[in-house]
Image (cartoon, rainbow, N blue to C red):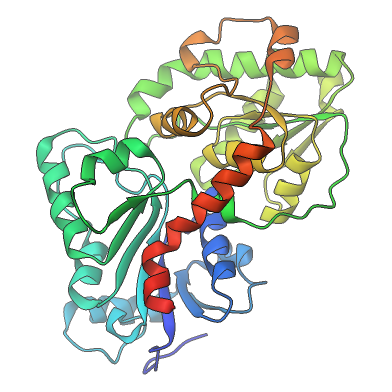
Length: 370
């Protein structure tokens, strides 16, 4: 839908990572479902919009040449008649997880944040962690940025500790603890694996991850072979094709015996609810993606977490230090029987506590809307 002159006073503009990443799409879906009486707007490439077309209170503007030109003009001139101009909106909510990574030595705010900060009256950050960052200038730049917007809620205590002196900064467990799940999934004798591509080179910690790729893929291949011997069905689930998770799945398949592949199901282009349903129906879960771990907790699936970043390690420390996890540096273990025996999940009492606490991710937005 295209608008040139738009009365967006009631709409809330969502700034997010719209690249088909299950975790980020769950962020947006959770936010929109949390405020059914509000109208939200997103600006997105059509190929990544499928995760949101079922939501009744979201207005989708597709990225195309016409809209790109309008946004370019909008950013160059001080006029509020163009599509997507932030001053037209009730609020701007930037929602995402690892959205404050310092890439190389760049210490500046993104162009989009500068525009939003200058032109919006109500600007919120929800669900993020801070870093990794390389120097003090980056930290200072974002301290100033956070102090000038309406509210920031981090999802890990380490990030909160960095900025807790600011009165508009808070902490709550991850947004996706609020996501409503379908309770009707039937359990199957299966293990679902949500891998990550360690060779994806646009992460800030790519150089430290790349060296583990061979061992990581080999470990997963052996785990799959062991699972099949134990008559477990195997599901391989890509959480982000844009970040090449589907390619690491293809690599894993290429290293398996031909006779094994027919017992493996791959879910890469399926919608979010399908992928969550597959996880929810599994007996075991192997999580490398952060939000597969959160979904595993919510679905009470015994899981083994193989984290690739500090964001996952920090949240395990914050919420459930007893979670079975294996560092990339320790993938030499081939004791798969013991690994499955130690697989565990967060107790239901803790889960309910964190689901309630996670509602505080919306504490500043609630003040505006309510």
